[in-house]
Length: 138
Image 1: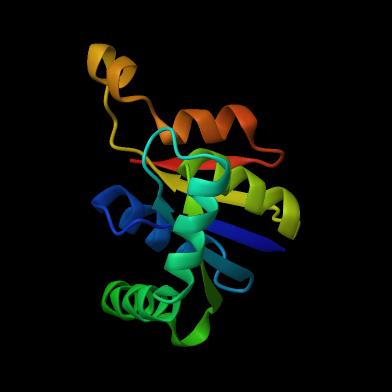
Image 2: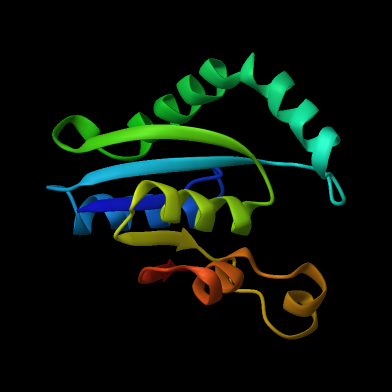
C-alpha cells in the first residue's frame, strides 16, 4: 500500500503527517510538496517555473526531510519525498493517479463560510477529484 501525504509545512499538514505515520507505519509513505505556481500560470510559463525549480529541488527536499525528522520518529517508517510545481489540488490528484497511490492524507485549515468560499479549499477539491480515499485532518 502507498500513502500520499500532501505536505506544505503548515500546522494542518504536520497533523496529517503525524496521523499518516501513526496509521500506516508499515506502509510506504510519500510526502508530496507542491510549490504553488502563480494563478494563471499555464503552458510555457508553468514549464519555465518547473525548469527553474529543478535547480532548487534537492534543497526543498532536504528542508522537508529535516522538518519531518523534527516532527516524528521516522526511523522505522518507509517514506520518500517528492516535489512538484503547480496548483496543489491538481498536482496531488495527478500524482496519486500516476503513482498508483492507495490513500491520500491532507490537512485542512478548517475554514468555513465566506472565508472558505473566497479562499477555496485544497482539501475539498482533492476529496472531490481523488481516485482513492482521502483522509482530511484538522
